[in-house]
Image (cartoon, rainbow, N blue to C red):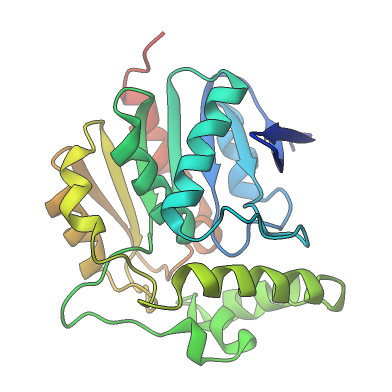
Length: 263
């Protein structure tokens, strides 16, 4: 297992905590509502050939929500500032769930600042006749189960995630998420009209049995990003990086290793 460093950085007056491990091209990894959790197995594997940088979203982990944070677009601009502050070049950008939405907004704005983009079961898009389960309308326990195709995997994630020690942090995180994604639900109606600006190689990874954002969403992203291709992970729900970690890492690594990263 890699031994990630836990660091803090001031980005234009806002402190951001992040984990970092590995060597190679920088892989800027934006997680979803699990962005306060620790180092996971898929991150360890990715760190074998990448410099993985995984920040905790502003307002997460018990930190106060910054006054400037009103939208996912705000979060995207903040992370572009963070990349500048770290002095990163040739960034491989990856976003999971909510992090995918943020990453897409970053790629729209980046124009030459990132090398490639990976979106994994990303939020941010509304697709006609393809609504999934609304996580705001189910219990936390059920929401975790709904993210997995295999009930046993969902139960294991419940045991890992829903601990008494993390309850306050989870509630605080959900308050920030609600402010960003409550209305309209989990999408920005203006996002699709700007996705043509994404001009880097893009991989869209999706769980075949995702009940939160059904697989039709993957093909909608592909249609709107001209450089995109889709990889469907069989037997997985909304979190293929947990449920089918080997298949996920293999698909992502193949993409990253075949896309040239500028010096």
